[in-house]
Image (cartoon, rainbow, N blue to C red; front, side, top):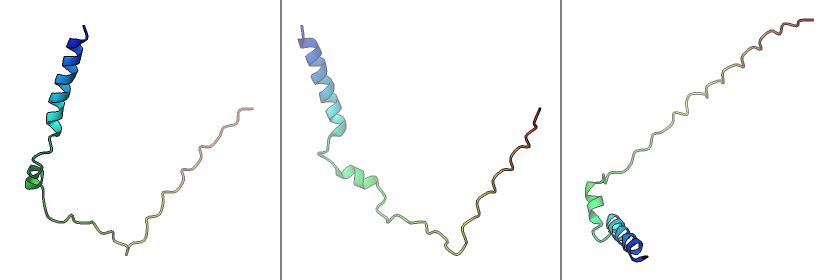
Amino acid sequence: MRLIPMLAIVASLTLLGGCFDRDNDDHATQNSDQSKSSVQMQNTDKPAPQPAPDPEPMPREENR
């Protein structure tokens, strides 16, 4: 009755648990770059750019 769905859930959780196995954690550090990350410096000598001017409004034609 409920045995088959229970077995399916246990089997899927067992298979999913293999994806998150943390027993051997040094394989991730072997492939990673151990050098320091570089930080891109901003040039503060230049002034901030001026914003674009607002667009001119469209002329309204009054039909009276």
